Length: 287
Image 1 (cartoon, one colour):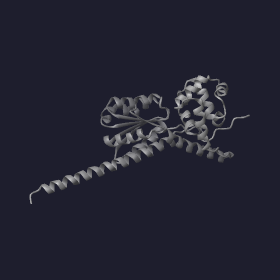
Image 2 (cartoon, rainbow, N blue to C red):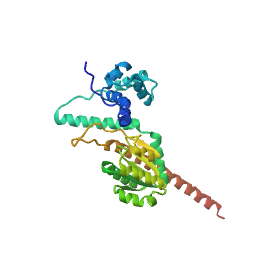
Image 3 (cartoon, rainbow, N blue to C red):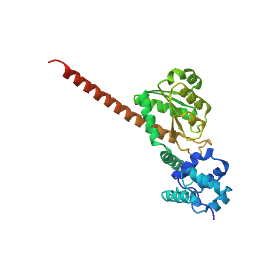
Image 4 (cartoon, helix red, strand yellow):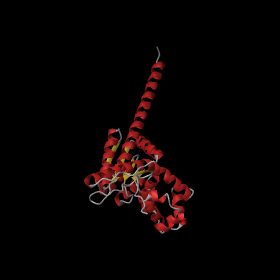
């Protein structure tokens, strides 16, 4: 009997996709099967899954516990419940199939990013940006383009921000521009050497640091005070590469919205305090 193809990603499947690059071989084999055939995985015993994936039962239990479950039984029940809320994407042909598949993958990536994103870290990042009033954004390639958009949106929200894609220049000025600022590094892989180096240097110079990445175990996370996690896009584009832009833009739009709201509250609060001081000064004047 042939296993069913994967349905739109559940939060568990999204988490496995995001963690997959950092899993040990035995756990990665089990995770790969669950990612590709989630419905089939819910029907297998732990012994059968171990046999199919050539992984030990202990490895499968380790995988389940890394996801927050006590054991395989709890994991399987949760996965089945999540898959019950999703439905396989209808298959088309030709160009329409490619468009439908890419659209579905982007939607799933956005949903998965929403599931993976730490709301407290997101709010803390926004508050830190407003408190310091300055932000420096670092990114290379496509992530650099996303960084430019983030910087432009922060400027519109009233935050002094600039995006660095020339890393030689970034390192030369990183000391003075990092003091009392927030450094935001964007790297889907979490391993881009120039971006990692910039975030590390910014932190050493006194900046508060934020990383936007789909690799929470990647090198960049070691230099981030706050981690904003995205989900990777699985669909390959025509040139054979994947794009992290949809997930990164979801984080950027949400972060800028929180920054704008926090900045507005701060302005309202300071305005109210100034009015109160003015009333007290007028009341203290002699008649």
